[in-house]
Amino acid sequence: MKKESRLFVYNRAMKKYRWQIIILCLTGLIVGLLLILERQGGLLNRENPQAAEGGVYTEALVGSLQRLNPLFDSNNPADQDVDRLIFSGLVKFDSRGIAQPDLADSWTISQDGTIYNFTLKKNLVWQDGEPITSADIVFTTGLISQGGEAISTDLSKFWAQVKVVSLDDSHFQFVLPEAFSPFLDYLTFGVLPKHLLGSMTYDEIVNSSFNLQPVGSGPYQYDSLAVENNTITGVTLTRFDRYAGDAAYIDKIVIRYYADSATAYQAYLDGYVQGISNVTNDVLPKVLANEDLNLYSSRLPKISLVLFNLNDSSVPYFQNKEVRQALYLAINRQLIVNNVYDGQAILANGVIFPGTWAYLDSLEPVDYDPEQAAELLKQQGYVITGDTDPVRKKDDTAIDFVLSYPDDDLHKAIAEEIQKDWKALNVKVTLEAVPVASFVSDKLNSRGYQAALVDLNLANSPDPDPYPFWDQGQISSGQNYSQWSDRTVSDTLEQARVSTDFEERVRLYHNFQYLFSEENPALPLFYPVYNYAVDKSVLGVSIGPLFSTADRFDYVNSWYMVSKRNTDNSVSNSQ
Image 1 (cartoon, rainbow, N blue to C red):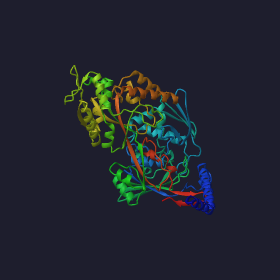
Image 2 (image 1 turned 60 degrees about the vertical axis):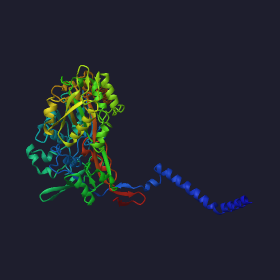
Image 3 (image 1 turned 180 degrees about the horizontal axis):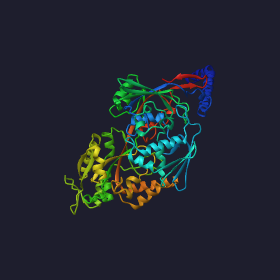
Image 4 (image 1 turned 90 degrees about the horizontal axis):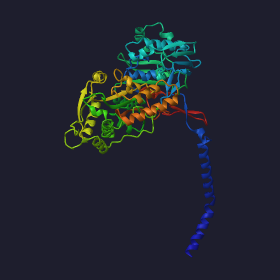
């Protein structure tokens, strides 16, 4: 009886709520259809916010202004950052290190790799309205080849060997003395206006007002300087609507200069800025905890390594690859990243940057394995006693050497961690601090070291070109500081830097990385990380692997602060 009563009540309830249930089902069906349409770019997509022109973005730039001129900015990252917004190069590179057009429309390379023919984009103009022509290219490269205090000797010597020929206003060619595949790396220089600077000498350009009121061809143009107590505290840039690429959305970018990341972050808290150019480890925890800030991180174009002097008779064991591999396995690199870098570094598998076109993805990572390290040494005849004496062979040859490092807090901390790890393997390491200013000349150039902790700075080198550091021809007077002598490796690198076949170059660099990982002539440690913070009101920001910190502005024309909805064409500020 109770079951029948419950059934009766249930049926009555069903009749009462039947229409409501039908309506709910239909509603669910309609919502489902609308979601499908949205995914397919249908009706709802029309109401999604879209980027619109407008807004002022203010960035706290750590550093100070010297000269806004790409001819002089090589030693001042703060100037490089602003110059990237004001000036254009012939080409620029994407995050994989592949050249893309900037002022150039296209280029071709002769079969022998010695002639590069370029065509400029149509209707290019300077920010004062004057046309950009091939004469500006010839003028700028001529300035670089002449050299000067702010131009590296190597760069000026390089350009002095390149013949630059103007064919007409839009066409020109570079004639190289010999094939050199990484040549496109050298074409990111900021092009300068001949009509404004062509009548000046180098020294006159150095002291010209142009350096504080520059005229370029980039996505933003100079507007004004902010000066307080006779010190430049900022610069304002406005959108350049005739830029060769896509026009930017943000109307103005205001740069404010700060001494360090801490004061830059305080300026953000005080509402003066919306971005922080460099978030160092001292303020990183605060930035991470701030829900209004988005943090963008990327690998810097630097790599830390331990180099071995492979041609020093006082340390013959370095010529044994199993000993080198054992030393590699014994370093707890992740612990160093955690404790010394506060997590702001990436373990390195090789000497070519990951994420780039030349990187060998199949490289096996080298994990910390002290047991395997000890086993390798035992296989080479070393007796590990576990006491404080250095590990020895039966002929009494001990692994006992000096590790030299640049005398600063960072490298000291890394060296001490490595020393501790190797001590656990009964390898005796004496640390030698060398003044930073003389480290390269006293230890590397002279080959006057046994082992060395070094940083290779490969900024502005999207093409990896490992040749200078690992080719046999660079042993005596070049940058092959380890003096690694391997004919197969050298043949591979020499072919890779002259080949015009992209796929062939990829294959050759993959081969090099495999051979390097087999031999470990040096021990790749880690790549440091760069952190950049932008307020969440600024949308469309993205960052890839960097070849310089200025690369964070490569996609600045996609940033926006104002959005609109297509349904009613209304525009709203995203702040």
